[in-house]
Each structure stands twice: as C-alpha cells, then as structure tokens.
Length: 129
Image (cartoon, helix red, strand yellow):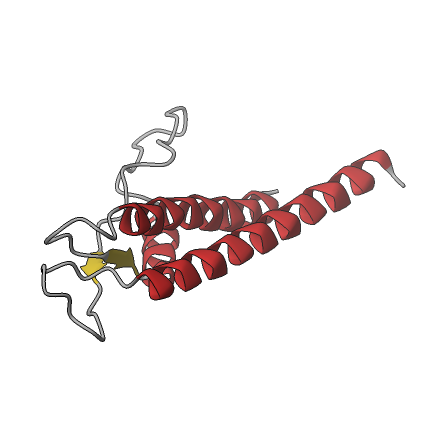
C-alpha cells in the first residue's frame, strides 16, 4: 500500500511543481513590457528531487499527526539570462517564455494523463475487472 501512495505522491508533487512553474512563466510573459523586470524560472528536476528526498520541510513526530501538504513555493527560483539584453533592463524574451510555457503545459498534461491512467488501473484492480 505504501508503494501505491508513494507512486501517486510522485505524480502529485510533479503536477504541483508544473503548476507553480506555469504561474512563474505566465508572470514572465505578463511582464514582458515592464521595464527592469527580471525573468525567473525554476529547475523542475532539482525541485522535484528536493521534495521527494526530504518529504517536505515539516516532519511529524507521531504517527497520528497529519503531514502538511503543498508547503510553500519553490525556493530555488533563478533569473533567466537573456540572449539579447533589452535597453530598459527587462530580461523577458517573449519567444523563449512562450516556448517554455508551452513545453511545460504539454508535460503537465502528460503527467495528468499518466496519473489518471494509473488511478483507473487501480480502480479496475479493486473492482476485479
């Protein structure tokens, strides 16, 4: 049972991080014309590894405690280095941000589809189909 929960937790963490990355990239796109705005992004693989290795920053001391889910946001946001610096100090390159956003959305949908199939398989196994 623990392996099922752990397997589903991996996908839940991945979906949460993909969603947070979408928010960051959308913010970059929305601020493409804002002077001195610095584009930011997160390293998805590093963040996922951090969440899965440590189990989150809150550790319970008793089996009856409820673990905290979805704590905080990504702590390892980095500034994107532009290939063509803007005169107004803005580092958002719209084409790069749109490509990153599109790729992240596709990966989010793939993770969600995989998770849905996994849950459907578990439901079929429980029903004995």
